[in-house]
Amino acid sequence: DYSAENALALPSLSIKQDMKGKYVYVVNEQSKTAQKEYVTTGMSYMDQTMITEGRESGNLVIVEGFSQVSDGTPVDIVN
Image (cartoon, rainbow, N blue to C red; front, side, top):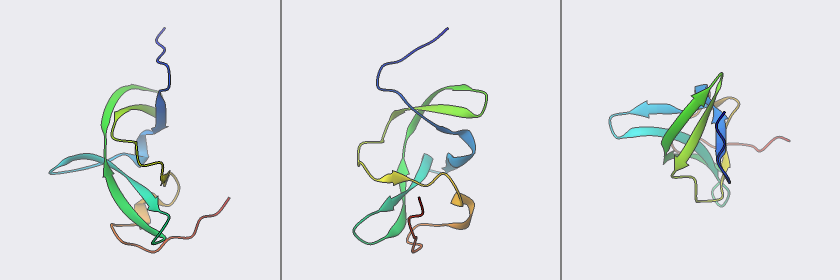
């Protein structure tokens, strides 16, 4: 078994990769747009991947509809 205090796990499919590295889309709450945030990943289990570095902005991570956004796409927050 493995455990890590204060670890953040995200759906593995929401983590994308480009030439600069792995990233997730977050909601910039001031501009209400999606923006890339580069992350470092750790262990994966089933459909979840641990984020070890890069999630410090406090912005919401887009985990649904992430395939329909790009950097700067206007977003609505739905609870």
